[in-house]
Image (cartoon, rainbow, N blue to C red; front, top):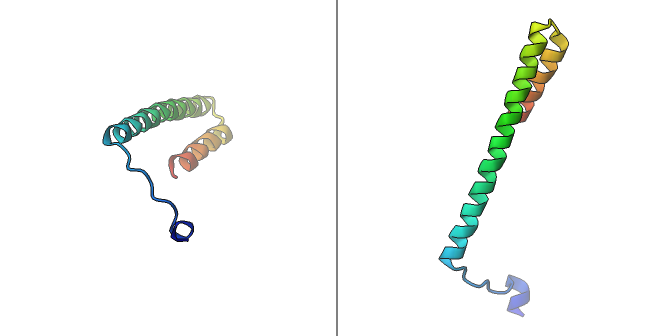
Length: 72
């Protein structure tokens, strides 16, 4: 009866397996961050090209997208 109310007890996780999982997660997040930084840099370069070509609307659109994507 109490198992249904409070749930089953969880098995204790081994400290090493927990650390391995955290390290894998950290590596994955670092890779994602690198990809996102590259994409943001490419978008800024596009905006600079639009600025050189006097395309104000295109430049504003890309910079606005970068602002929205930089904040969670």
